Image 1 (cartoon, rainbow, N blue to C red):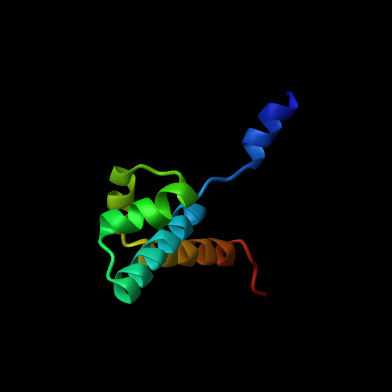
Image 2 (cartoon, rainbow, N blue to C red):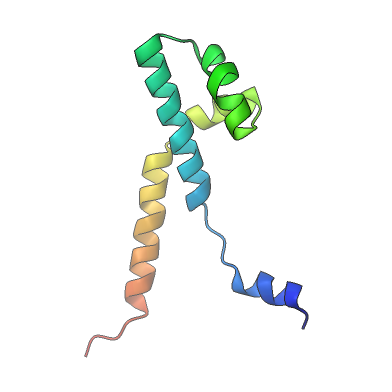
Amino acid sequence: MNNANIVKICMAYNKSNYYKKIIKIQEITQMQKHQHGLTYKEIYYKHIEEQFNISSRTYRTYLGIPAKRELKKLQEAERLKGQQLTFNF
């Protein structure tokens, strides 16, 4: 077994970083919308496009994702998974 296969076996995938990125984008959007009254299009071109390197379609999709709720569910599932592995004697 070579090193590439070992890395693939050891790495677990979850969407926590994906949801954290979406939350950050949503927070920037909310702040710019309320403080400066910018439109979503202006926010995308001035603040999001360069920093996150995503398309405008992806940006609009991210705004519709309930990322905080999904991240909380993911963290709760990981917490419960950790409890299942412990023994309480």
